[in-house]
Amino acid sequence: MLSPKNQRNISRIIPFGLIWFVFGLVYALIEKGILGELDYHPSTGIPYEFEISLLFSLSFAAVGLFIGAIEILYLNNQFINKSFGQKILYKTLIYVLMNFTFTVIAFSSGTALELQKNLFDPIVWDRLGIFLTSFAYLSVEIYTALTLGVSLFYFEISENIGQGVLKNFFTGKYHRPTIEERIFMFLDMKSSTTIAEKLGHVKYFEMLSEYYSDLSESVIKYSGEIYQYVGDEIIVSWTLDNGIRRNNCIQCYSDMKKNLKNQAEKYHKKFDLVPTFKVGFHLGEVTTGEIGVIKKDIIFTGDVLNTTARIQGLCNDYKVDLLISADLIKKLDLNSDSQIKSLGKNELRGRKESMELFTILS
Image (cartoon, rainbow, N blue to C red; front, side, top):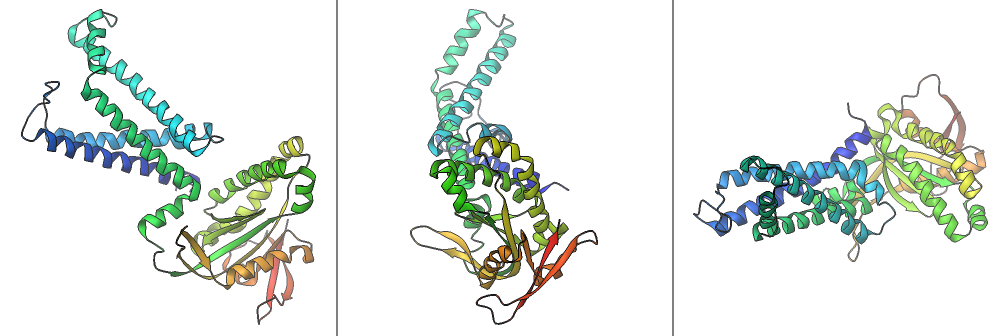
C-alpha cells in the first residue's frame, strides 16, 4: 500500500492532469468550431482531423500530470518563501521557458531530419524563425501559459486553505451539515508566553513557522488533518477509521516528539531553545458543515472539542505531556509494550459525568 504521504502527493498531482485535460478539450472544441468542415489549417496548411485533436486533449492531460509531478516533488519547495503572486508568475515563466526550449529542440531537429540538413544549417533556422513567429504557435503558447496559470492558481489556493477543504467545497460534501465521529488532538506549546517574551515578536513568529513545519510532516505521515492553528496551538483531527488504524493518532504524537528531538540542534542554533509541547486526545461526534457569508469555512461543532481542550489543559496538573480519554483508549489497539497508566477520574468543567484519563509512559 502507498504511504499516506505518497497518497497525498498523488492527490495533489491529479488536479493538474484534470485541469490540463479540460483546457485541451476546450481547445479542441474551439478549433473545430472555427475550422468547421475544413480538413486543414488555413494559416499553415497543416492537415486537420477532429479525432486527432481530441487525442491531443489526452496528451495535454499527460503534460499536466508531468508538470504536477515536477511542481509537487521539486519546484514548489524552491519558492516556499515567495508571495502568492510571485510563486504563480515565476513558476509560469519557468514552465513556459521549458516548453519553449523543448519546442525549439524538437522543431529544429525534426526539420533537419526532414530536409536532410545539418542542425545548424541556415534553412533549418529560417523555418524555425517562421514557425516561432507564426500566429498558430503564439496562440498555442499563450493558451498553454493560461493553462499553467490556472493550474498553479488552483494549487496555491489548495495549499493555502487545505487540499481536503478545497476538495470538499467543490464536491459539496459538507454543504449540508453532516454528523461524523472524529478523533481530536489539541497540541499546545509549553511556556509559549515566556518564549515569546524572550525571542520578541518577529523571532517568535519565525520559530513558530519552523515548529509548525516540523510537526506537519508527522500529521501527513499518519493520515491526520490540521483543522486549525490557534496561536501556538494546533488542532489535529482524524476520521475515526484513520485515527485508530495502526494507532495513527498516537503514532503521530510520538513522531512529532521524535522530529523535534532530531531538530534540537537547529532550534538551539537559531533560537537558543528547543520548543516542547503537551497534548490532549479525545473522540466523539461532531457536526461538520460549511459556514460563513463573507468568508466560508468548514467547521466542526460538538462537545468533543471543548472536552479535548480541557483534557489538554490538565497536562500541567498531572505533570505529563500526554493525556487520553478513556473513550479513545478503548478504541485503540495498544500492545503490551505500551505502558498505559490510568490517572483516575476527573470531573471536567462543563461535563456532568467524570471521565477517566490515561497517559502513556515513555
